[in-house]
Length: 234
Image (cartoon, rainbow, N blue to C red; front, top):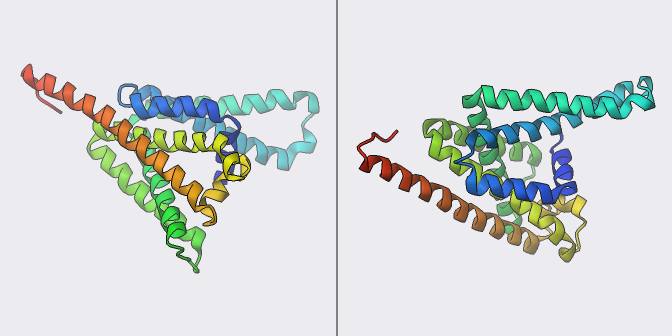
């Protein structure tokens, strides 16, 4: 799948994604299943939109124009419902996917930032190398999360929420860097907009550190409270 579609969708509805992602970042630990359901829903919306585009490209001429909007909405809602149900029903798998996505996305952007900041050129299959970084670190983070589920899920959601929130914040700010919002993703990774990329990284790191501190700090207090009452900590 082309991730460009995801980012264009995010650019279009950046304000909504900003609010939702901040909720993930600061309250994800306390709303784990709700957060996973929302992740499943948005993943389903993206997947439904992607499948619809594939259907239109192949069978567009056979679909009546009067039914197109209804079918479009139906495909998206059906896929979104199925993915949401999957994320809720298969909790462990959803936890791994959330960690995989957060770890992969974070490592991918750190990787691109290092390449841009130090002007490193990957001559042999750069896209494949970037994909490998995403998969490798995503898989590692996903496994770590399964080992320390509750606290790790809170951290993963805080990181993922901070990443999406940072990108959402950059959408309205992109014009100050003379970049069109629809070209924001490319501009953050092309190595020519170091100052904008640095601002993005700083926003992301600030939100990540603060949100993780808030969630894990509260979790530690809760666990200490349980221990004081003689309960065994998980």
